Image 1 (cartoon, one colour):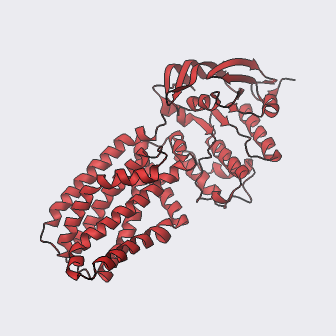
Image 2 (tube, rainbow over the protein chains, first blue to last red):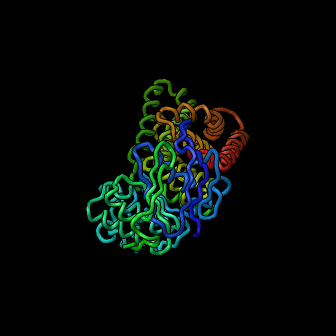
Length: 226
Length: 222
């Protein structure tokens, strides 16, 4: 198994609070890993650590072969993160936002129209200022920015939040397509009914530690095991 | 790095152009301050003329806090700061890009204010070269120091009030140096303006270097 995420006894602090208190985790290629747990359990912190955004206090951690202590910049360049914030500029249009993030990530912005099309925001919303989008449309646009990067590791924090039924189905399909193409997806979600069917593994996080790690109904690569 | 700095600068300026905050709010604010100073001192015309340089740069100090606050909020409002790190843009490039955008806005305001002091205060400019050089060099220092402090207070809850408290004292050398250089250019006080320009240049270099070196640490989450 190609190791995409490898955490051993990782401790990460939010202020003085140990938001991750000794996390151990191995995630391989093409897996879709559901991270579940109550509010404040450490789900978002786990994703931020894997993105190289939060410094680890102790333990060993590698993401995509890069050390999370000594080579965080390389980790950041290789992952795609959809957090609670959408990281979109209100006064730019949808397309201008995506072109900026593509250029900033040194990606050919020719990929932008296809990503917008993939998330169903190409036709009506391309030239609309982000400040005029609904919460769901913002979410789709933010995910399109992740799609443009074509990362090997997708880190999605509540990706279905604020979306209607069609949008949720679309996000699921985008996740499955990414895994089929060889990417690994870690998603934190409270929507267990929806995401349990999607995942190849379910992690439960509580009190900053991973308390359970179970196989899901789907095989790595996005194919249904049944 | 220059490519990324240019990308960030053009993005900030594009946002500014769309929102029209500089032209619809900052320029009128600066003009208003200039007019109010005029009302306060117009009864004593010689004092007004002698104080013109200082009033100009005090107004620019106020304007700079608005421009820096706006520049900071662009990145903090919806988590774009974090996304800049993930995109892999080198922090010095972000710093330079944001400083350029702030500097361009301040220079635009300075042009309008300069016209204001000439028309409203009847200021007589004797050395336009010194005026332009002072504006350019002082603005580099203001933009660099402001961008650096903007990032420093970005995570602070009351950053709108903390920023001026930190920024205005830091900009005191600019206020002194630029005022003296303008005094020379306007002929209101007999000083060597070009030597004060050297102080401004030193201030600018220190803040650009300091910002480029430390901006990465300030962008990081704790």
